[in-house]
Image (tube, rainbow, N blue to C red; front, top):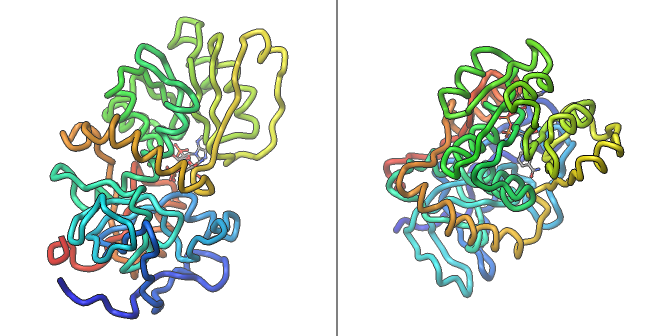
Length: 339
Ligand SMILES: NC(=O)c1ccc[n+]([C@@H]2O[C@H](COP(=O)([O-])OP(=O)(O)OC[C@H]3O[C@@H](n4cnc5c(N)ncnc54)[C@H](OP(=O)(O)O)[C@@H]3O)[C@@H](O)[C@H]2O)c1
């Protein structure tokens, strides 16, 4: 095993700003504390929250590194005290609260999952943030179960493509919205039961037509604002509305009569600030319920593009353009040599 250097390359902007602040700098290699592992990062997934963080709108929670990056895959190179579920040299992917855009990253061992043969390191790095978010919101908070119908906005987003993959496996009918016909086609090809172009008509009417007027059991919403009253009109009786982002506004008008008449439940969550205990329990549930499907190659992320660490700015610009389908991933170092 190669020696761990003291310094590493990382992206660690000193001030918020545009994509140009994402420059490679030297930073000390972190040391694993109790319960943590140090990962030689092979690849790091990019998520929309990284863009908000870069703009200064989503600061890291207390104790998290200022280096962006919420998910990585790579080889474990050292173990902190008390870690017995993994060994040095194992390839894992991990959900982290920051620090992914770097050659080395710390992860709580309880938030790591082994990368199976069925996944490349790039695919491994593209899984944790969307998988943990969709599982905890659609399945845990939204109680999605087989035979139900869900509506997911942003059908070709990292989150949306993961929701399609999971719904396909768990017998849930999934309707999605997308901003173009080309994206709708991709969503259908990935397994969405229906895709609605929200620029080409009212999605509320489309959902009513697709469900014979009954409505959907759950809306997984990343849009917020004026979508809330429209989403509630899409819900069936006992429907659940789960908010995970507010791209069109953090406040909304709520028609309480509709909530009472249909006995709706409104909930939502943010993954990053949740406690290590919560994330560890979530990882255990995902290891039991989803990881066997990942190991069989049945659940995989959709990779749109990869960029080397030094081109993180281009990667962010691509995500901000909205032209991607699925995930954008940074590759860090020589994948073949490391894995
Ligand atoms: N709560 C949490 O814990 C959590 C965790 C991770 C991510 N998120 C949130 O989930 C969202 C998706 O994240 P991601 O990493 O998958 O991002 P992404 O791939 O960049 O996707 C963003 C999506 O938002 C859709 N969108 C943007 N404006 C829209 C609008 N006005 N109406 C309908 N759709 C709109 C886009 O769809 P079109 O191009 O088709 O318009 C696009 O598919 C982000 O908002 C992110 O902040 C939340």
